[in-house]
Amino acid sequence: MNKLPHCVWRATTGQQTRCMSKFSAKKAAASATTLLQNEQQIPLSLQQSRENSATTAETATCPHLSAPLEEAAGSRIHTTAEWQNALPYNEIPGPKPIPILGNTWRLMPIIGQYTISDVAKISSLLHERYGRIVRFGGLIGRPDLLFIYDADEIEKCYRSEGPTPFRPSMPSLVKYKSVVRKDFFGELGGVVGVHGEPWRQFRSRVQKPVLQLSTIRRYLQPLEVITQDFLVRCEQLLDENEELPADFDNEIHKWSLECIGRVALDTRLGCLEPNLSPDSEPQQIIDAAKYALRNVATLELKAPYWRYFPTPLWTRYVKNMNFFVDVCMKYIQSATERLKTQGPSQHAGEPSLLEKVILSQKSDKIATIMALDLILVGIDTISMAVCSMLYQLATRPLEQEKLHEELKRLLPDPNTPLTIPLLDQMHQLKAFIKEVFRMYSTVIGNGRTLMEDSVICGYQVPKGVQAVFPTIVTGNMEEYVTDAATFRPERWLKTQQGGFEGKLHPFASLPYGYGARMCLGRRFADLEMQILLAKLLRNYKLEYNHAPLEYAVTFMYAPEGPLRFKMTRI
Image (cartoon, rainbow, N blue to C red; front, top):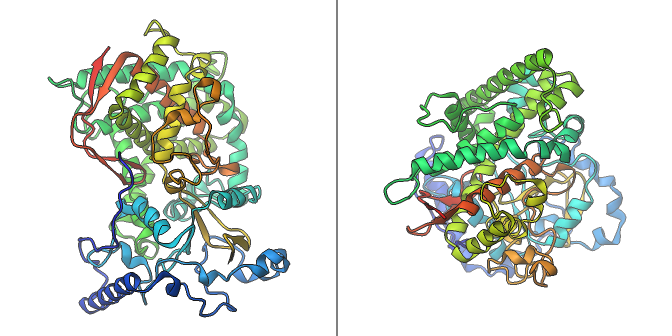
């Protein structure tokens, strides 16, 4: 059910890119067709022939690295037997680029094989065709992508990184923060799209209050109130068949934004009010977040013309980002004034997250940038994860019944307020969340830009290459997960909790990443999802009585189509 589908390397339809002349388009199409035929006819062993094993191949490297590639020549690793016995970089298998267009043509209209929504399928196909390491080079305007499907090698990459790992992320956001709005951000770029020492310094300023357990506990009751309001809203939306509307995903976005607004901006934004107009502030925030995040792949995987002149897509992206900054500044300034006149709010004996940051850093700007990053990355990520979890619950009645029984045991009275100790005992619920992330990882992969020459899977890999760790694939590989094709939440439980013995590689499924650059808001994300599922499944039954949905990538990996769930009180 809902597995990544198999498909062949085929062309898809679309509009022809404007910058290509008819002649060049025909020529590129002919080259692409020839390449496809060759890839299908030539044995893999010949495609990987070692034509020039003594020479290291040229590689496109990350433009954000300050040191040139050649400086790695004196690296100590070059004197090791591991390096000297490794195969050269140019022998890593992967799709062959064509002249001029490289491999970018594969995502182009008319002549290409894929759309952006196929990214998860591409990742799976690369592994099936080329093996545990794949070089995807020749992408116009960006470094080579090195897909690594070996969980042991992924672990080695993570564990060898230094205190300031370089995570390849959103060059569009990098340009916005460091060029377009340098007047606002200056040297304070935040934690998203920022690297090196500036990233470390900013994260060190906000990390403690964000990750403190006392801060997380403070927001349990406020987030429970928001979730209860959301469920009341859901009941109001049910039609005569007790089904939620086709655009229910937008309602989930409203709930997610209301939760994040309460945490990051210290306010209720009013997202759950009935009949929000399209020009209301909450709906504008949701629309701006969707647009900014869901066009990241288009901006960065297709030809990046926006880097050289303001394309319509880039212009609208900047407008949306400016709107985010203005909204955050408005609420931060309000919180600052309230703090000056009334002092810290001290709910549950703790100042709010925003108050802690303002008081400790004495800076509205740091608080604004922190809130911007939390909102920008959190709205769509959490919303799409919840869409996936609700779909899996609705299509897996036996799993849903297990969770309901656990919740009924822990919460005999359905109106019992949630507490941290109660959440800690919801083992089945937490295991279900982890299993959804394993099989249908909302974030299809993590990655790092290599900061030094490395040996990976027996190949010499130069620094500057972007290593991709495709969680959506490795989490479903039998060699790392026992019975990987079967949805079994109990694999995450201890034996005494009803779990079973089997393989579960700790680096095969990492929805929040690992190490110093692990997701900063992960504890809030977990809390929000656990509260929603606990309140929903204790009181309602969820069903899905329509044609199965396929999963696709917008910015996140989630079911594509109307989420017309039937929601019945029990």
